[in-house]
Amino acid sequence: MIKRKSKDETKRMRHAGHIVALVHQKMKEVIEPGISTKELDNIAHKIIKENRAIPTFLGYHGFPGSICASINEEVVHGIPDENRILKEGDIISIDVGATYGGLVGDSAWTYPVGKISDDVQKLLKVTEEALFAGIGQMHEGNILDDVSSAIEEVANREKYGIVRQYGGHGVGHSMHEDPFLFNYSVGDRTVLKTGYAIAIEPMLNLGCDEVTVADDEWTVSTADKKPSAHFEHTVMVTDDEPLILTKLME
Image 1 (cartoon, rainbow, N blue to C red):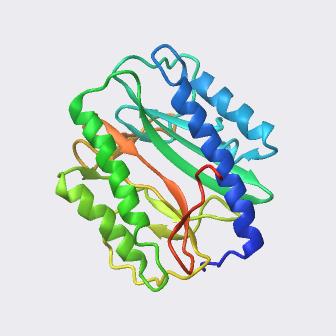
Image 2: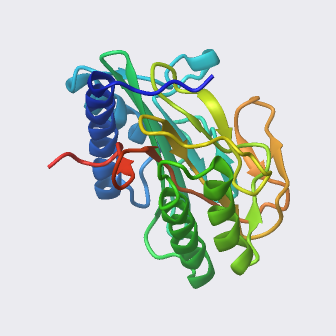
């Protein structure tokens, strides 16, 4: 069952989202060739704790990091590791959650490491475009499938693979709440209402749709080993325009 968020809950989610945005602001500054994914995790953990929040991911079903750090063909759930060193031409998806006052903010972004190829740069641009196409459908009275269809339309235009097994989700007191949001049309007629908060997160691939899970039981990669991009914001339906909760507060 989907629960509307009260004004107080929204305020706390906005603060949690601000902390997540602070992490991404710092990631953009520090991601460069030579840094390890564990160093990135340490930086994110420090920012979250300094802002009196809890790293939502740390310990979630046993996950060992405060961020998911997924490189190149890794789609999501990459485990931070001091031996995973970024190099020129890589891309890295950083997914991070913060819990403040019992409410969660969740956001992901894919970053270039130095100079990347034109086709991969386009993948990042289009996946971000797909995210905002989905956000644009977060209006009272629309249905959930409007969001899914908007994402799918952008992906299909470029003939990108769409990750099928993973997608967006409701968010609030828990990181994963109802509803599940597919990144392609499945005909979900759930009506969007003011106060609904959903993490919209297209994951698009330069190649096929199919993914595999590594022996660590976390890291998800494309089956054809081609690059994948992941962009996510936590978004709330309001009486007016969609409210992106995971961006810096003015």
